[in-house]
Length: 327
Image (cartoon, rainbow, N blue to C red; front, side, top):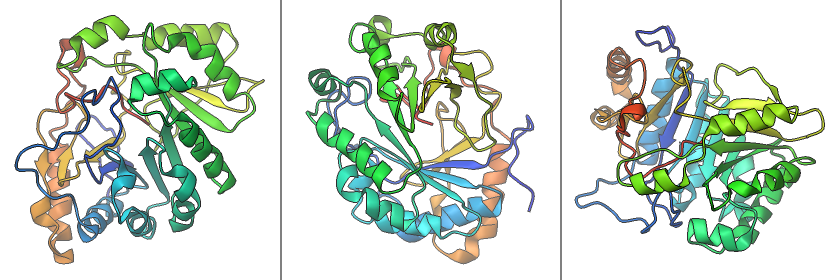
């Protein structure tokens, strides 16, 4: 079967699949008031619906699936979700993005279930500042979870951090020192302007280009990007075991290498994280016999994918409460 391709000859090998929108942290740049369920909320995708979505994408060449939320580990059946995705023919990478609060206890279990990669959010290495940014005093538990993941056999762990001016941007050198002897890919994610948080963006935004210039002057070297990698520009230093990635949605040609599609926790396909509307898929997830129709709808929708997002115009689309995009 032909791989997924849009009208700009971009091919898509990577699916971000949300399994819940619930989160138990209250990060200042994402959910400062905590999670609040919307009125008339639909139920989250069932295990069978998840299996059918992933099978459909795998049939079109998807090789990597990232399980996201909210906080995906809040699903009681999360280990079974990992097993289901990992056992789908054609899928060879199963990743998750997590706040890490259950990682210490579950890293080995998730690894055995088929999880191959982890992204953990750590916005500060200082416990008080971590508490200030996330609303939770759990840095010690999260850091122990990262160590547990490495001990469980994950070859490396990605750590996501949103640098905020006047809060944690002064910790760049501390972050670099932390990964010097650890197999950690540290991702600095540029704060985005998301409509409801214009004042936060104005007060706290740190340009990814400034961080990039600083890395280059310190001898960090740019690495090539794989076909199913995320959007980060990755840098390696000869004296560091860890690597640095910069996710800069405002940078020139950020969308040129787009290789990811997203499905929400209630079954909507989003061609762009910043797109206004989603394409309904759930009505085609009731039975395995609907796979051909599911594939056709996805292919047809992809023809309407735009060349770029509209963040520069202040349009954050479907991310009014999100200021980061982990990779």
